[in-house]
Image (cartoon, rainbow, N blue to C red; front, side):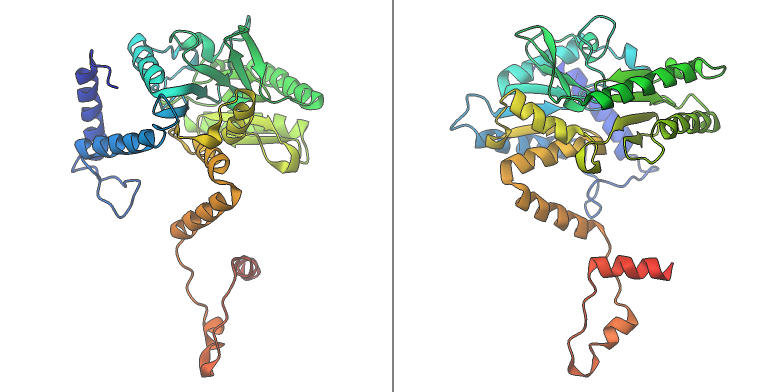
Length: 355
């Protein structure tokens, strides 16, 4: 299902950007697969097309469309990054192509973003930046905590937030707003993400994608934000903070000390919107590490926790270099006795003692 009008020009632009980023002889780069040389543009597109066709064919017997769910991040995935989030309005051609794909290729199409959802007075966000026809996509914000119901034309919560956490986030936002009113700090409201009050989270920019703020100034402001977080949560049990390099995301911890991520959003939305992710096939898209939990959540729903745990352990082993055998451990194997095998936990304890 190709959207022909203007596609050739767009593909040529993407080709030139790809070759400039990955194929310049004077600027060698490391590909995602270290043992594989950087493929050319045509091979890359062919591999992507083959994967999409294979997955789509898996659902032909039970679905009218290739994918049951198309779940995607927005900024950096379907839209370019912008130096100021409030002005990153979706282009008409982008909306046309994505809508065409969603209508023809997926039963459900869902945007899951960390940005605020908007869709109501005095709370602008994702809804105000997207120009695709309403109803083609389900828009969600705050990593999937909230979504816009097109049937009722209202913002709904995918997960309830305890009252004490709601009050904590409100106080955090109030203090950050006061911080930005101090001399020298107002500029942080106008760059990148600015100050965003989301459902169950606050995001505070310390730079933009172009890094227009000098690093010492950015770090000074980040330290001030961290002090506010520590004042509200001295023992670090209530709030968590994640620094992306340009933004600081501050959010309440959930039961067990884990924070709500996009994988949590996928699980909540699967129940609220009856997406039937477990039945597949699903197309899940993202461009950063914060999007990986969406893939993991979909796999857990489809394959079960045990299978995914084995898969993640295998990936961890492949990524971590093999540990050299310690002399005293190897010595135990001499004289016909079987050599002792050091477990991962024993290795960590030994390294702590050596430090």
